[in-house]
Image (cartoon, rainbow, N blue to C red; front, side, top):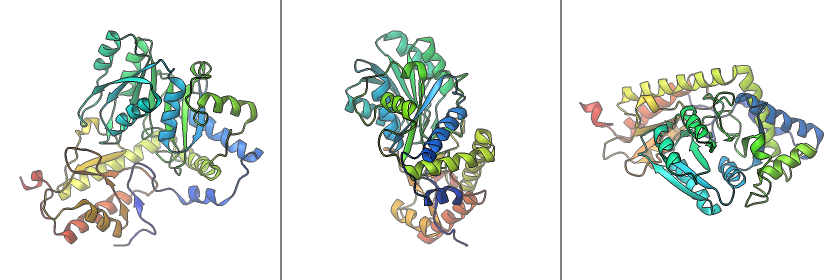
Amino acid sequence: MNLPRQPILLTPGPLTTSDRTRDAMLRDWGSWDGDFNQITARVRRETLRIVHGEDTHECVPLQGSGTFSVEAAIGTLVPRDGHVLVPNNGAYCQRIMKICRALGRRHQSIDYPEDTQVKPADIDRVLAADPSITHVALVHCETGAGVLNPLHEIAMVVAKHGRSLIVDAMSSFGAIDIDARQTPFDAVVAASGKCLEGVPGMGFVIVRRSVLERCEGNSHSLAMDLYDQWAYMNRTTQWRFTPPTHVVAALDQAIAQYIEEGGLEARGARYARNCRALIDGMAELGFRPFLDPSIQAPIIVTFHAPDDPAYDFKTFYQEVKKRGYILYPGKLTQIETFRVGCIGHFGEAGIPGAVAAIADTLKAMGISQVSPKALA
């Protein structure tokens, strides 16, 4: 097997980036320089266009991982006496609840099994019963298992009750359609190192302008105050504090390639092809996906671990890595799984190559029993 020059990251971010994106980081930028400020402005403008939010929303970038921006969104948009409802079907929903606890924001959850979609009717029922709830915080694509939650239907329920919707779209933004003209939301949170295929280090929050204008003084933090960041950027065109200049430049170049590829429709279609090729190829080896196909997002697929005493994830991981691919451990607590990402710049041959590497690894480890289904 011909190995890639460097391991392909089959993870939900960081992910494999293009040479053009990496090359964009070879230049140093002055953080207050006019040329760099133009890059920031372009990134803000183009991310808004992806969700058709130019007329109604603002893009506020923030240093750090996507979780920084999720915390900033909750801390800035939810007043200190607010009450957040979190539909919980995975690890990243649970992280939102952990953020609420750390910030002292009142919250409650609707809990689901990790292989189950959030149900809009449940949110409707809870909002109708409890008028104290001010916000709903939804994870669009829960990559703990790979579940795609029904954003539009949930958004319509939240809007019907006159509440605010904050969407963690970390793993869906840029690949799965979110249209601010059709789907009401007050904030969508995403990051550079996901479906836009930039490098990690910068998040951004797309916030309804009329909501953001009322958020002065809400934030628990100076560094994570989206209102202050937005107001300062609008006044000066600059970031308040030292920005991740190389990350921003790389994202700018990644977005240019995103547009050249055909935008959301083309990016989403490529990931969907990757997902189908992955599930089909792994099925030939005997692997079963954890999720029903009807709720599987084309971002990352969770597979049941081989039902064989020779299987050990750490060894499995290292053997697949030797063959040029990096997988992701399972995120579930009750059954043993591993995950394979479908996103990143690795071409149409990447997924078949990964399946071949996994097949070679099974032989090398002496694994003959992959799943009970394979033996039936």
